[in-house]
Every structure is written in C-alpha cells, then in structure tokens.
Length: 141
Image 1: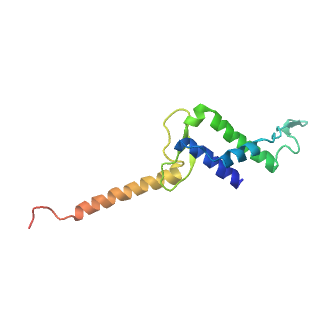
Image 2: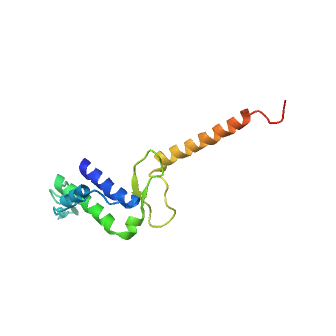
Image 3: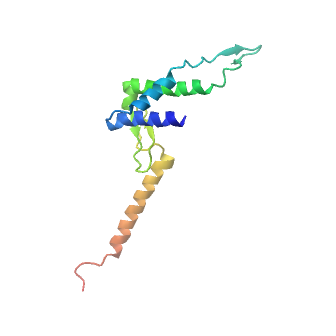
C-alpha cells in the first residue's frame, strides 16, 4: 500500500508539475490494477438483503487493484484531472480534487492547513502592527 501511495503521488503530482512520472510508478500502478477485483454481491434473506458471505472484505490484491484503477480513472478523466489541486500550505503535500462546481478550495482541509495558514497570517499582521507602534516617530528630537 505504501508503494502504491508513493506511485500515486508521483503520477498525480506530475500532472500538476507538468512533468513525466517515473516509469516505475506507472508500471507499478498498471501491475496492481491488472487483477480483476471481485464484484460485490447481495444475498436474499427472509426479510431483506445483505452482503453475501465473503463479499464484505477484499483480499489485499483486490484492494490494491481498486485503488490503482481509481487512479487510472482519475488520470483518464479530463474533467477530474483539471480539478486536481495541491494544498496551498507550504508544509503540506496533500493533493485533492476540487468540487466540480462552486468555489475552489485553497487548502486540503480548513481545519488543518487553512486554519494554520490563517492563524499565521494573523500573527504576521499583528507583529507588523506591533512593530509599527514601537517605531519612533520621525521628526521628533
């Protein structure tokens, strides 16, 4: 899963950076996407339906295939690819999809990066205001 995460980041960030992803990343995603994940199934019960036994949990290779296929779908869909965005925080590496309509987000999360950025901007403004108050008035002797 860690190798797939790294390959996915390499591929997705290459779209934003205008560079080619590494061949190793592309090869890994293709390799992991190859197995056909099992189709979820329902089972009739006397009163309703429920997931069929064995269809609730995916084996590791099927789970990796689903994630790799989702990445391939993202890269293949021009409208989703255009909404791919990097968090504006200088310390965050998160990539995310902006919503298809409405105002685009600037940060991956307002609670995390957005709040930190706004708090840092407030501290900078306050420090500048405080520094301006401490500066001696010009022209006085």
